[in-house]
Image 1 (cartoon, rainbow, N blue to C red):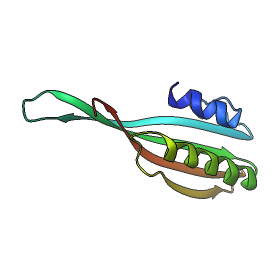
Image 2: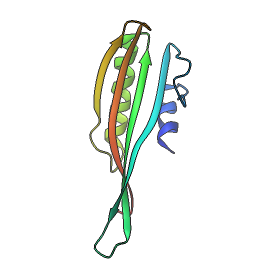
Image 3: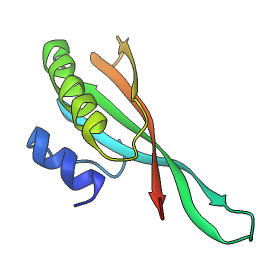
Length: 109
């Protein structure tokens, strides 16, 4: 099961491909970078993939609950760094925003 499917299952919410139309509860997953790991013989054995999960919610209480659920899910994933969460508000769009950043090491471990 991939990251998007895990989030959709935990939150019972469809993950958006982009924030073209914001809904009262919107979540988007972005892959930020993909860095290969190389051993001494030049063979790639793993890669570190950096992700952001971006939340835009109308209800701050729901945002706090859902970010806690996803942070706990990420902590339980193997080879995942500790997630960092930043929160803010967007008064123009009347939304509460959160961004969870983390990395996952993939490949031969």
